[in-house]
Length: 274
Image 1 (cartoon, rainbow, N blue to C red):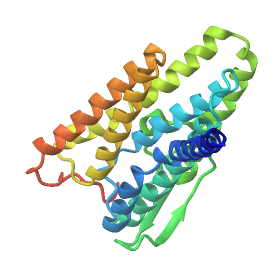
Image 2: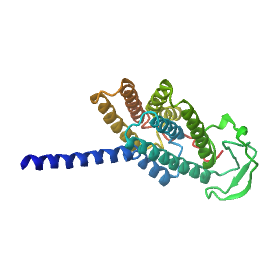
Image 3: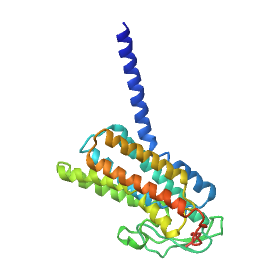
Image 4: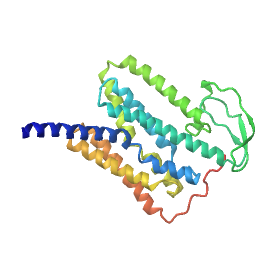
């Protein structure tokens, strides 16, 4: 009788651990961005956070979703990619909104598809438009000079819609080509491994970590160390733990920047307008 109870208890505990692990996999990657989101919202200063972090994660998770159609990996990882993409759009929306509200002078509209003749006049600090003129925008008007530096949220959405459409079409055509789908999977892991590079470069350029949430980076580091250790212990493919090690190294490099630049003031070229 005891062994039956133990088996049943073990099954119940196993299910509980499995559900807990799956839930953590879904929301665990989002947690580091909560303190950064709150800090930007409270200070109304998004300049310490690099939006290229959002770009890296959007591309990495898009590739991971496409890779799922070839290699049906665990469902929680697929859901995590969807949740992460939504989170990145929330971060972008907040940063764009705050930058527009902080504009204190006439600013040129920079959009994904369109010319740069449109302009908006904003009242200092209020974000209220006094005069606005827009011209028609076409996809072939894309200006690479302003890539991922657009002044409206819709441009970021439009760009990712194009990426998703092209990615879905190519994946559909080459789904049976093993080497291509394996490359997609590797690029997804490698792009995520380079996640911290845009933030590292931004800190180095500003010689300051002002505006960046240290809590976010600490949570990055803890999560990436746990993930890399898991890859090693579970004998995951070599590219997984190599990319994980690279990711941890970037996290530690950013924490080193926090120490080196701790006495440096906020950069004077913080953008309040264009």
